[in-house]
Length: 202
Image 1: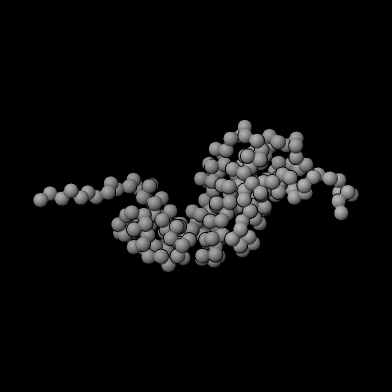
Image 2: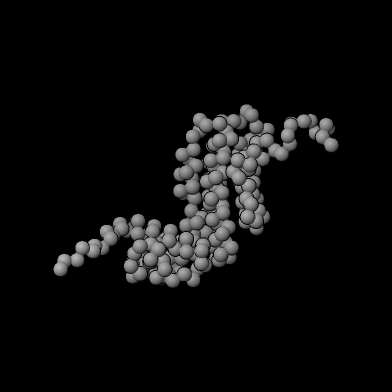
């Protein structure tokens, strides 16, 4: 009798590597760095031995997976897709939502494995340079509204980055992070109901 079962088509090398990294990062976030290669292989949909044809050791895979959480290339790509013709607040809400997802993931990672996450990020990436690239992307979104701001677009971008961290960090916001729209409103409008002169305020 002929078997009708078929093996899954092997992934191309780049996709296989990406699947292993993504699966490992997801498991490390959920369970910590001691996840087994068997669990990683199952999550990635490959044979366990495949891991060691791509990475020398499990520790190398875990290190690369951790570092991938700090990789800003896909984030910068997402920021570039934001419609520059949309109103400023709409542009910034889209940007904040993208950055909040990344920020929350990094803080979860640090909580899960401690300073190893930061060390891996520094080992594989220039984090200061990437922060600068993110700020430049935000500045580009803000620049068309320069004439309506009381500070330079680059400074507005810096303040927005600080607000995102402060309003997203799990230990600061507990289980209630500020929505992206609220963060943008805080940046652009403050918390006063009206823009009354300072001397008229109680």
